[in-house]
Length: 328
Image (cartoon, rainbow, N blue to C red; front, side, top):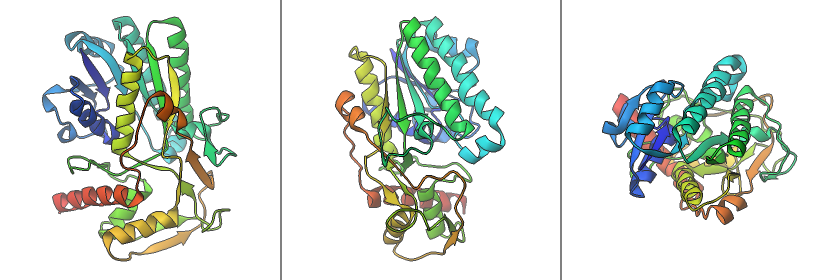
């Protein structure tokens, strides 16, 4: 039996492949390489280039590799782009997910783990966000992910397939052994952009807003190391295999750091200052969003190993330096 990882050549997906291999799992990957990289897949012989909406191809993969579970990362993830091109997100994140889910049901796949997002919460009033907070996504990206959660919920009520939907907070860092990392061109993640600025790849970094109702005036977010996030998926897989019911769970550390605190961490790791420019707020940015990960820890048995901001930044910095040297 094997695990199919969709989008397994992307940032989180390639770390997922590593975690599954470390756990002794048989892995097969499907990715259309729109934003992923074939060299990031640690089992290149198990990489199949194709689209998750290609029912014939996916059905063949499931049959040929005896796929028991699917971990689904394939999709589009840039919030501002989803506002300017919403139909792309409803196609890639919702419509194609529906096709994948249907193929899995027809093929008898037992378990499905879905890459969801904290964007489904929108701008919650609570500083600590648990899974019962009202859902109010503010972007087509968040809505496209929530629609897939709804499809999975309804599918599980009608068919013999269980699922876990993991709602990510701010994913950062890279493989501790330096094998893979965040390689997407023009990524907007704060830690990646700050590391690129510290390394001279960018000439400055903008801080959007310094007048929020937070201790230092900048936004607070919950940053989770990508390897801990991958481990949460493996924990979810084991939970479902053990007979666990379908559920939704947050993936974060339960505490946050402000933009200024992140930038100070990057300065510490880099050992020098860099150009930081303060600009007006972006529309729709909540002052503070921090997860309550109690469910993932209690129900899935997930135990983070990299809950340290400087460590997350150091792994991200090492990977950015690798990319800088590679592209020079």
